[in-house]
Image 1: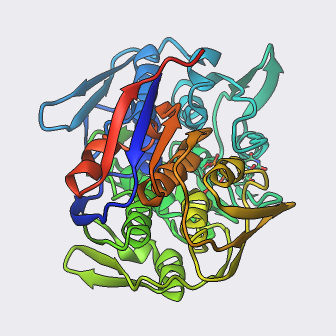
Image 2: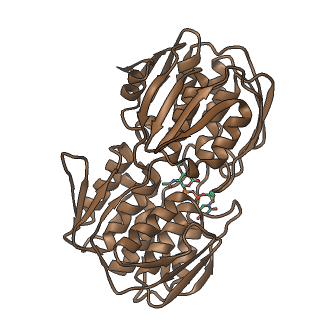
Image 3: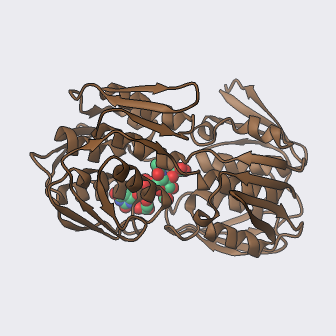
Length: 424
Ligand code: EPZ
């Protein structure tokens, strides 16, 4: 199993090009199941999760080819198989994004329930409720959700849950509604840029989606979707992670292919901490003012502070001059990094879904264990600034969401090495 060895203390300086967004690419890839003819997707990152989705699509009859220039070409060749098996779904829960497209195009879908994951209990009840509102029937058999519908009919539906809107739930219903008969209005829809990107992709294929990016999305069903060429938006979470990498190492990074308008809550928080973030044509420059101020942060659905940057921000706040308070409102248990940061000398106290971060002068290198994608990123950030050597085990988690992370960090001055680690 791969691990990272990081010798901390290097200042990061240089230019990083942000890759296409994983969480845009995954539902867009699922949507290709509904499309006639060839689709060309640009800026799809080469990641473990993307490869898992491509494997799933291949099993469902889609021809997927990665070109030398990185573009993905996809064409549906066979519509017989409708089963997303547990083996793939448990590797990546975004596999559930095929429910809506399969139901709309093939009139049925059998999808294994993903079960729990490292960041907590993650139900898909809202996905299923939304699809039922469009006319689907559902049944749970041997751990698989079976969905079927003779036809889908547009309707008005409310998609809010106990923790606000649902990103992939909105994606599923939006995709199904694109081929439904009549008008669908989704209330309490997720407003994340990735949902907007999916809506734009569907429209490029001939769908009629409006209001995406607001909590009320209207979809007028069309008879068919046709292939197109489409470029995925830059990954705001990857950009945010590099911003924090710059801030924590007292560095200076120029992020290219970055949309600061997708990161307003993050940039606002970083500026309160004392990080300098300046727009530069087509990107941002991030540098640090050395002294980090403590802040209070609460994760919220977009446009609030993203849960996917909570762990990374916690690492930065470990070194702030005073006490910070971080509250997690999306995934109440998303705190597996807390104990690992503690092993590196961080002073953290968890109370329910809040963590009090008492700033310390320095973090100290230690062997730590990655547990989920963003927690792993937080540990790598800690390693970059810690005194001495940090070994981050199980970095397959980070490979799910950050393409060639160590090579890109080395290029801007980090001392990080991938090793093959034997875990007894
Ligand atoms: C998406 O997950 C992202 N994944 C996650 O990114 C991200 O953390 C999350 O949105 C929140 O921003 C992808 O886009 C592939 P949700 P998703 O449904 O759609 C509850 C990463 O690191 N809920 O918006 O699964 C849920 O438990 C990942 O890249 C229900 O109650 O998240 C949570 O509390 C991890 N019932 C809240 O809603 C449901 O049916 C928001 O979850 C669905 C969700």
